[in-house]
Image 1 (tube, one colour):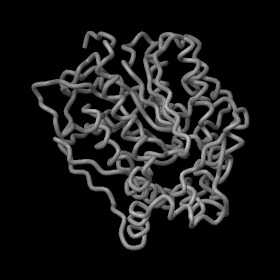
Image 2 (tube, rainbow, N blue to C red):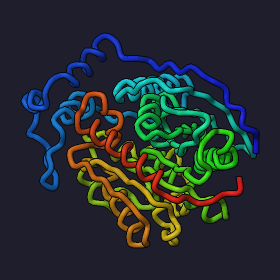
Image 3 (cartoon, rainbow, N blue to C red):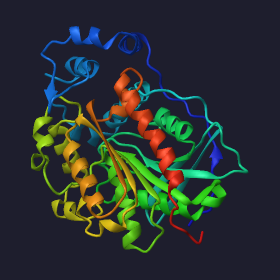
Length: 379
């Protein structure tokens, strides 16, 4: 395993400006009732819950009625792929609630046996080198097609400061250039590196959590399964936001897959592209590392927080996963936010419910990771 040699970095993410800035500032400052009055259609209601009016307004403006984007073609061309991904990074970062500066940010690229990851370490403002704190290895979402360390930079700062933990944000190779299990192998490498070097990083070696949103949640849960299968130190906790944990069944297996198939941010057509590009070999989708929900020995899984919005195509598989873990005796906080959509982290700047959900889950995580006794390690 490579040595720990992370160096300080300065991170600059693209900021909104002009009309985009005006739009999101207005969305933040104007009342929910104002946006409810501006909707083009009747308020969306499912299971007795109303979609947040700001989110419905945003979806009507940017998502509903648009032609289906041919992501496969765009991402197969390096120039268009880079432009598309840069746009996603700026958009997601710009829509996420900001936090105060870090004590420090360092970064290191790790390579081993064909796997490669860049790990960016976020040390919270309160961090002291003389007092270790927990760490969470976190993976961004984006369907294994989008997202980066920069797309989630504001969230990583928010997570580090508000949970008082070191955040190890890890990159991974993206599809269609790299298909399954490339991203998963990168994630396992990142985890093994953090476990191996916990003391040098300056964190508790028995309070190492994994986390992620959407595709990143899949990687985090997969790490737990991988560690159990291979006799490694198991993560001490999981923080999963709207995780994609069931790849082998199509979305129509779940009611939420039909209810929110189009017009709610994460649509079925995009989900189909994800499966085709990152999981082209359909036989591999039944691998428990690809679909952690299929792992039979769930009693060995770590405690978890699983959080999802009520208007999310992944709502029901997240709910089922939480239920199965609980039935196996795992301590799980399942947090359903009825008026939110997929990727609600990236609405935390302007949408009060998304901000509350993001901060609430982070705060609970900080409490829960400190309560766990953790799994001892020799490193």
